[in-house]
Image (cartoon, rainbow, N blue to C red; front, side):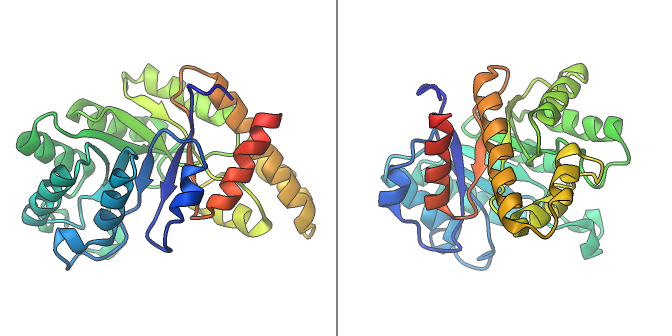
Length: 276
């Protein structure tokens, strides 16, 4: 693995961060998931508390920020504080799903481009913004063209990067990149990746990432149903193969690892990748 191309890490406030362990994992930046705490002042919101500590320890932070979970007032309060503590990068997402049955008009930011436009209006180019991308297609998009249309709107609103949901193969990421470029989407692509370590991981990720049933890796893993050890072995092998391909492909930014707060496992995984 080239030292100049380092993976980045997603972490959360689910459990205390072991900074000694975190510092032993070479990384380019840390993204911080936004989990609840909306009724607290900014300096007490868990994601901002963690972000501040990361910045104090020398890390570049990408803060997740959801439109439907914020009003214009709360957005300004949070981002003023984010600016105060040195956050320069935001992962801008829609937030609450349509299943909430709340009409779009009741939100200040019903869709991601609305939030991007508001942030740029209030803060200019201070924040670099990235958005989510779905290699297998966004679950709410009727087809690929529909998905690309909405992603292009985020591109044109001023987002600079895409951090993708995870995929099970390098080719899926490659196809996603090609589709983006064919639709005029110029954002740099940071491929998100989960390390499949168990049958539980596999089942969870298949649902989360909306991996189709006919995906070749899904078919391979299904043939091993009931053999947890073999599934774990194959899952690690698949994850390693994808990371190695992505690290070598300069059309992509280095992968973003969804750690699920298992930093020890991620450290070992990256060590094993280097040995391959």
